[in-house]
Image (cartoon, rainbow, N blue to C red):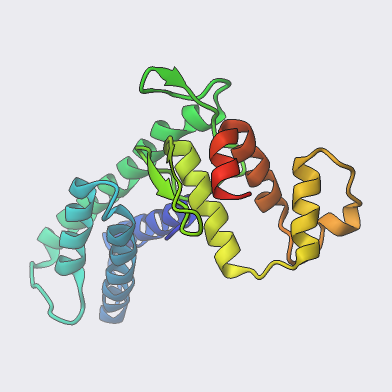
Length: 218
């Protein structure tokens, strides 16, 4: 639902706000921090709901603690300790995420899963990265195919793009021409209804799993 970059921005913003809370401000500032903290922790909890139950519990507990609607009173000293803990947790979670996926996405071979190596995601990819693969069914044909974590991540990105855009037959023709290595004019590629990331994503998917591409897209 949220891109990796969006989650990163949320964590950085919250870290800055909680660090600032260690200094003296007017009462209104702390109320503002409660409001943005509730929204920020809500976003983080939603993002982790299906990915990591431990982080989900951390973020949803933080949301309950900081919410401005039903205030929990701790006192200035205890709040400062909580603010420091939040800053540490947020920075650690940023480091953990980058360390977990950074080397994998930018590596030459990709991670090893189920005894084989698979194609790494392109550097521009900023969508959700799944930790495990799963079966996907095409509704029109009823055919089922297994996708590894990276393929599933790219499939989710591509279908999300298709859902939010309406493709013309001409646009689809351009897509298939590019995938077939046929020459297409730049002015055809740079149209509003034809994103370069979408095209590159399709090419990446077809190269990673040609059989799955034929089943899910053709």
